[in-house]
Amino acid sequence: MQAIASPPTVKVIGANGQISLGKQFAGRQVLVEEQETGVWLIRTATVIPDNERWLHEAQAASDLARAVAWSTQHPASDSQTDTLLA
Image (tube, rainbow, N blue to C red; front, side, top):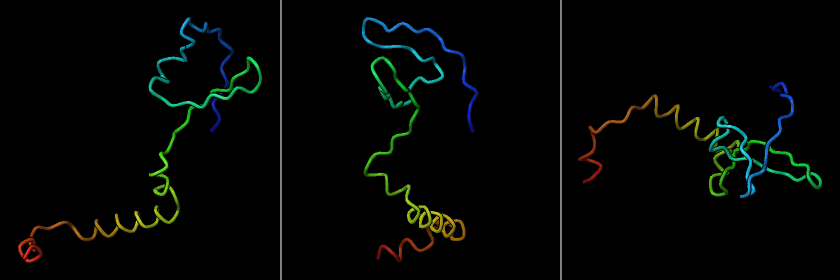
């Protein structure tokens, strides 16, 4: 879904080299691409750590969905705890 582009606004880069994009973006990660000298493209992004990337693959999603379905049909129970620990 494409958002309607807003008209350009003038921002001042502070002495520390930062600009404010607004509170609605506070805490978000962004990709900053310098397309040419003085021209930047800033896009919000979600970064996935390398050691968690496998969770977003089709096989992992399928396995997790199957595990969740199984767990809803087999509620947790402490009834056999003593037998399992023996």
